[in-house]
Length: 255
Ligand code: C2E
Ligand code: MG
Ligand code: MG
Image (cartoon, rainbow, N blue to C red):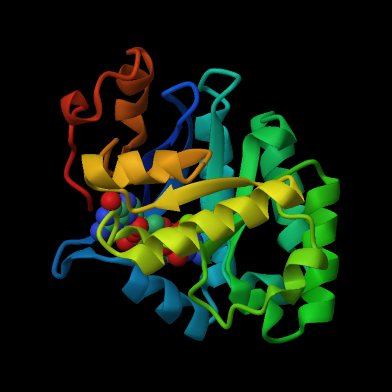
C-alpha cells in the first residue's frame, strides 16, 4: 500500500522482435517494485497481492497511462503492450481508463496492445467478453498471453478475434530437443495463422530455440536472447541501432 501511495512502482520494457524484419516491433511494459527493505519484488508476487487487496485498478491505470505516454515518444511503428489482470475486468472503469490513457498521451490506439490471459474466460466470461469487444472497438490490439497454460479451452478463440497469441515460455524452454514442444508450437502457429492472428514466442533464450521458432513460423520473438526488460531511458539507444546478431545486443539486468 505504501509503494502505491508513494508511487514508486516503475515500468521496465522488454523488446519484441519481428522475425521477418529482424527489427524491434514493440515493447512489453512490465511492472517493477524496488523496495528499500525487500529489494526487487517480482510482479508474480505483488500483482496477485494487489488483486487481493483491491489495488490492481490503481496500478493498472498508472501502468496504462505511463506506458502510453512513454510509447508516444517512440517511433511511429513501435507498439507497447500492457498486461491486464482479469481482476481489472471487474471494474466499470477499464474501458474509460484505456480511452483516457490514449487521449492524454496522444498514442494511436493501434500502437497499444493489451495482453490478457485465459483466466478472463473462466469467470464472468460473458461480461468480460463485452469489455474485451469494447477495447477492440477502440482500435486497441488484443493479445492472448501465456497461451496454453490456462484451462486451454479453444472455444474462446472463436468467440473473440485475437490479434496475437503469445506462446508460453514453457513450450519454448525445451526446444529444440522436445518433439512435443515443437509440435505444440507448430500447431499454435498454424492455428493462429488460420485465424489471421500473429504469434509471439515468449522466453526465447538460445540460438537453437530461435532457429526452431523461426522454422515453426512464429511472427515474433520475446526473450533474453534479444534483450531483458530495461528502463524507459535506455530505449532510445536500443532503437537507434539496427538489430545486430542476437548475442551482440546489450544485456541489461532483469529486475
Ligand atoms: P508475462 O506477461 O508473461 O511477461 C513475461 C515474463 O517473462 C516477464 O516476467 C519477463 O521478464 C519474463 N521473460 C521474458 N523473457 C524471458 C526469458 O527469455 N527467460 C525467462 N526466464 N523469462 C523471461 P516478469 O516481468 O517477472 O513478469 C511476470 C508476470 O507478471 C508477467 O508475465 C505478467 O503476467 C505479470 N505482470 C508484470 N507486470 C504487470 C502489470 O503491470 N500488470 C499486470 N496485470 N501484470 C503484470
Ligand atoms: Mg504479458
Ligand atoms: Mg506471458
